[in-house]
Length: 106
Image (cartoon, rainbow, N blue to C red):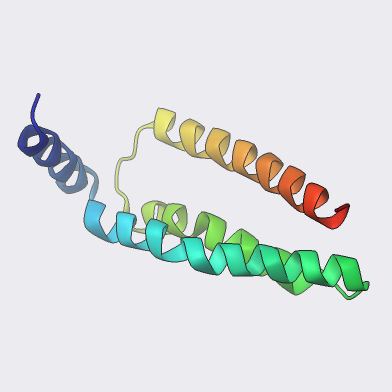
């Protein structure tokens, strides 16, 4: 299977489910620096005893932003995709929690 056939398959899925894979990928990759900055903000606030609500909300938003696009724009998305998203979100949230915990105890 070559790169062209993989790209054609992905674009076909986008058409089938009403989601532009390029927009999804752009949101996903574009949110990474903002998520990282939000985590740094959160760690700084934890260490200095400041409120953590806004950094947590910011990190959470950037973490799920691509999936929000999928949920809003998508049509007839199979149930297994929702299950996969929930699994990824749980794993990512737990991983982020461990990272913040580790950074605040350094």
